[in-house]
Image (cartoon, rainbow, N blue to C red; front, side, top):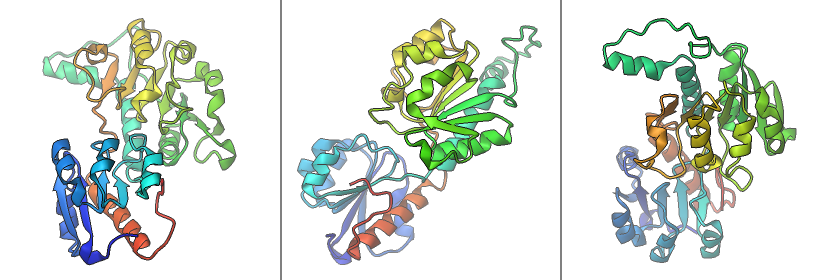
Length: 322
């Protein structure tokens, strides 16, 4: 059980989000504080009954948090949390699934459009004051999305939203999910993730919008990349470890696929020595697909809902994980 409202302390832990300021604007009367760095979190986590956090979490923090009762994850991914340890300590965990579904889907769409319309090249040329001539080579010229086949791996809230956007561009959308019996949503067809590789030769785009699980880790490996068409593009707004990064770099270097739009990498920040930085047919964004100006307020809505459920003694949380 949570402490009473007068005794509760919430810790907001994030390097950039304005969660504390937005929370204070709600005038809840609840006590809270904010930390911006891991060392500060390690010093102060013992004060917290509730922790609002994502990437700053380390499982060893549990030993420094005797009061901790509930963690509201700021992100939808929870692979950084040792769920068995949380369960053993009686610490509840909920994620932020759905908080940025529109933003991530729009970002994936933007990556596809940017690559197919050669927008990164145009921006580079603008910086050099260079007016590029028209391209005669059909394999290098700008293209359109209409009529293209998009495979979406992970047909949850984000994937289904991306499917809806893609249909507006007259694309053929094939969705893949763990349980196809749930339905195809906005996709034209849906299949189990296990049969993905048999569909890769059909794809013009492969978009990853799935969570990181044992089934999806390194799902796009060397074999999968070999199955893709030389003209195909890979879009990853899921997790970096869903892709074998070394195999992807090799495929891109050898031009065995046309390019990639990457928002997530195996290690973040991406190492300065990574070959991905210098590839003209790769568009990198620094894990910003989910960023949106309404993020903080939506997270606080989730937090408030879950605190209310815990105080009422309800057993089920919104987006419950543990």
